[in-house]
Length: 216
View 1 (cartoon, one colour):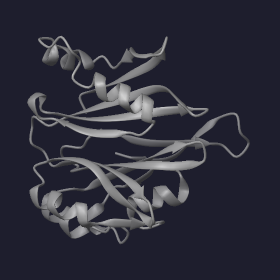
View 2 (cartoon, rainbow, N blue to C red; view 1 turned 30 degrees about the vertical axis):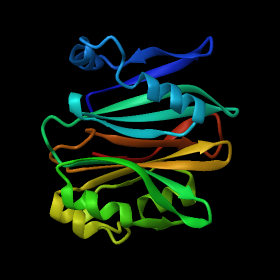
View 3 (tube, rainbow, N blue to C red; view 1 turned 180 degrees about the vertical axis):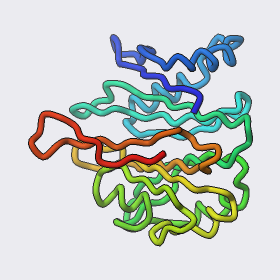
């Protein structure tokens, strides 16, 4: 991951409020453009409250655009930028429900060096509790798997082994009490999306968060 931004709603418009120090590399990469490459998508995500995954092929980036929803409104939007210049295996997928189907289906995706995996994945669907997206749907909590190739619950383990994918991280987008989407990120351990993944959940006594899961 090359960096992250936080855009907040100010006077009816999304304005960048914070960014990781490494986002400077991204700014330099796009400085010749007068228009931020994902500003329109950020506004669309803020309005629809639905996340997006987009491939910025010209910049060799994948952007995961994620709404933070508070009382029925996207109060801010987080953008994660995944660098694809090194051609390491990488998948970013968005899974959503479809009317009349009690399962999650792919709505958008971006792949790097995963041609066969990319052809297979749109034909997969996840019932509640099945696979990483289905487990997120069942629990409304992020889920991680540090060994996809040997996982009894990862439905594409054979493809993961062939393509060099080891680590999977999935997180929910929740609007009120309803799950609207699940984002799934897959990578190899040698060129992982992140060095460490952590999930923090409210403690039983409330008022604080506790580390419930870590990988890396």
